[in-house]
Image (cartoon, one colour):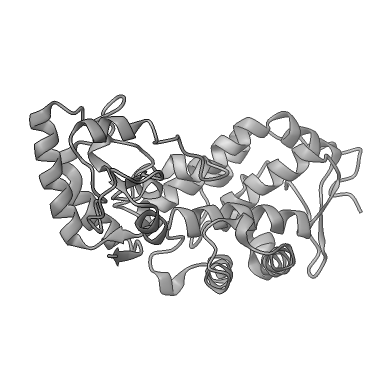
Length: 316
């Protein structure tokens, strides 16, 4: 059955959605995630009946990015994190996968199905708990059903206002995450990203080479005869979401691959601070663009990453 009779023609406004978000009682990030997932699914394939499988797929991709790639807590402590995050961590560990594309298709489908089932527990039932009195529900769901049902007016509203709804959902999500990830930078940018897109850093090879750096920063291997010299972020890019020159070093392929997005042992932070002092004397610019983070923040950022349980401490 449709959510509302056609004669009633429910009306929606962005102010209603803002009010729903502003007054929500939050113990996890499921509500903004559900709003964002609905906007994506309805805009891609407008329909009055939206399957939980499609919503579960969106949930999985959004939470994978935040949980595995950016290591953002979705609750005050790991022990109280949402069930969705726990299941994602389990699969990431099982397949040693950093990116969702590295998980076998059959395992992806199984995970998405599990997460769609999680939606039935409390997420769908509680979503409208904080809606303003005059707002019609965006969807209706009968306990146990595998679909949510929307009125024509709700579908049209979501499709027409997708961009604004996503901005509201991102802000709502990030506002909560800032409370439980107080030392993590660029949270709003991490929330709105659909993947870990990053700029190429090979352009820094010449800059670092001109500073006389010719050995792997980690294992001290001589790189002058190497054909695959690589540039590594000592404090992972996925933590900073920036490419300051002061965080970049030359690395051999083996060390760069093994370190991945782990934090190195603290001794390498001290070593990097010394390298940056030499670079400054040689006139090497600390930034490749606008200065997002000062190089003097190196140790503070390292300690902050450890404090939010970023994986570490790696050494070759």
